[in-house]
Image (tube, rainbow, N blue to C red):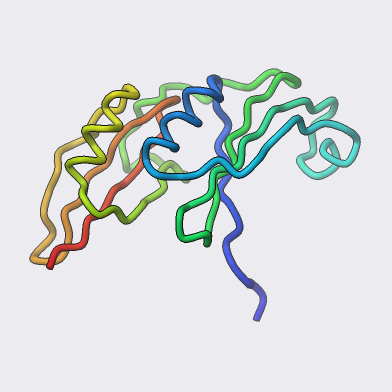
Length: 146
């Protein structure tokens, strides 16, 4: 076997505190963080003079994490519009299973989240929706029915 597990997904943000609050409201738990800098970091990501703050957010079941990063140096690069549609090439969403999708959406709205489309039912299996959160991050939510 080559892969043992998916360890984390990294997301670069401008407002680290807002991103932490959003994902905490979703149910993730902060699991540490700190300043990342030094030659080893430069070598890993292929940039010179890295200085960034990170926050690790743990999924409640303990099997995955998000690494939120706010770069101080080199300055972050704006990749363009943050409200790109779902069919844009590249990675742009992460999906979470939830117990009560309507409650989760209502709580995330207090952190500025908006539905991308609408809440929809897939057959008799799931309620699904996409929510756009801080920094334009799309979070997909799925509530299993029955």
